[in-house]
Image 1 (cartoon, helix red, strand yellow):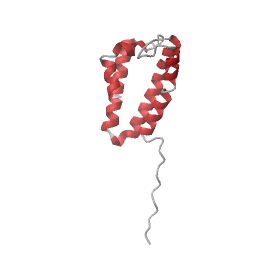
Image 2 (cartoon, rainbow, N blue to C red; image 1 turned 120 degrees about the vertical axis):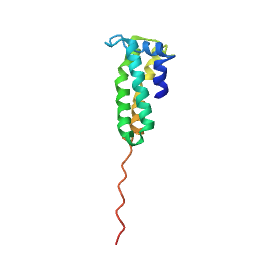
Image 3 (cartoon, one colour; image 1 turned 90 degrees about the horizontal axis):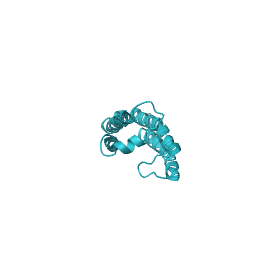
Image 4 (tube, rainbow, N blue to C red; image 1 turned 135 degrees about the vertical axis):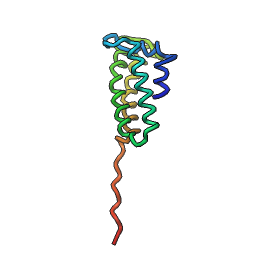
Length: 123
């Protein structure tokens, strides 16, 4: 996430701008910069705050859900970016977004079973 966020702010900024839907009411560059900062913050928090992994994992999952309409728009509008230059490639990509959501939830501990504490063996 930190690396992807850094790419938003630097060398792949134009590619990310191409993915902002035409109907989104915020300037493409501002959207890309803002989402890059959010990605850096969430990625850094996930690493630096292990006690908050559940919270950060939930926020990451929400982030992946919030950016999904941009991926759908890229498919519907036929926008080329990141090598996604055919409708088929753009469509296949859509099926990977739920995996990112699941990855964030798993990393945050949302999908793991809670272990019950063992009963005391005192007599």
